[in-house]
Length: 354
Ligand code: NAI
Ligand code: MG
Image (cartoon, rainbow, N blue to C red):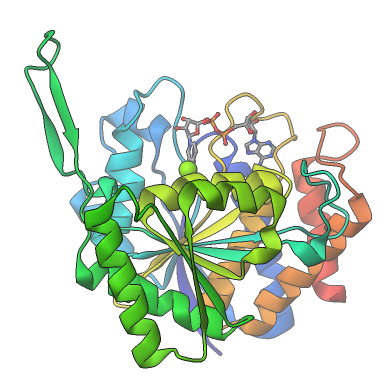
């Protein structure tokens, strides 16, 4: 029997609440599909930082490296200044483990109300492949004369042929496994240096190795328009880090909200573990109320299982999530009629039926 080693980082706020539901579903999937997991909990995040002054030590990072996957809830608390946990934990893991693909599906399930009037599920089923290690997130730049009227700040976008080409190849493969259509999103008309590199690599890799995949290019501003008005234009979208960050939140809104948005930070080479997390944050406003929707966390678990080769279990998650969304028809946990853990319980039943 296969055993997968999973590091569990519940994090802050509703993070541990939604991850607990994911693990409940995982327990059931193990019985159904005949695999096991060894799970180790790590207490990391804003709460832990406030208590100890430590975000993520190099020793802990090296322990994490030994796992097959990392399952993360959400990190961050209102009393920790912005940037400390994002850079010290999320970006540190992404960079150290070279998780160069950020994969975010944008799919409207039947039964979910999109804020886009008239949008139907057939018209909204795409995935965004966001480059996850370069661009302005690389941290290049600096500040001169801080706090003075002469202050200067630069934040530079780093784009390497190596980094761009590998994420393009991943996206071309993903398109090949779906409807065979790949759209590059950038701003080549203004960001001519970076955009030129991306466009050349896109054409060269496509011509040489993926002539069967249909290629398309859309400027990022137009992509925002089309994501709302014509999401059916897109099958797989590939883009640089910052544009990907922004358009995937728009995608999350179109698909019915943050409670439904899952993401995977992948090292497709599998030299280091990949990390799977709901897109939402720690939602301090609803922690402890039973109103946190665990669906995004459960969908992220589905991505984790697919990546570890447990396709049967991943398919069960997909079908159970679709069934739950169809039966609850737009309703979300309200802490009274339905709670976070009741949604988890129902999913435990549904994965068995699926
Ligand atoms: P947030 O995503 O935590 O919350 C935004 C709004 O969405 C809130 O009203 C919240 O109640 C609601 N919400 C979020 N997830 C939900 C769920 N599963 N079910 C029902 N409602 C949900 O974003 P916010 O408020 O900007 O950030 C709160 C904290 O989370 C901050 O410390 C922030 O730094 C951190 N954060 C962490 C992220 C991560 O761990 N990847 C991502 C985004 C924010
Ligand atoms: Mg974001």
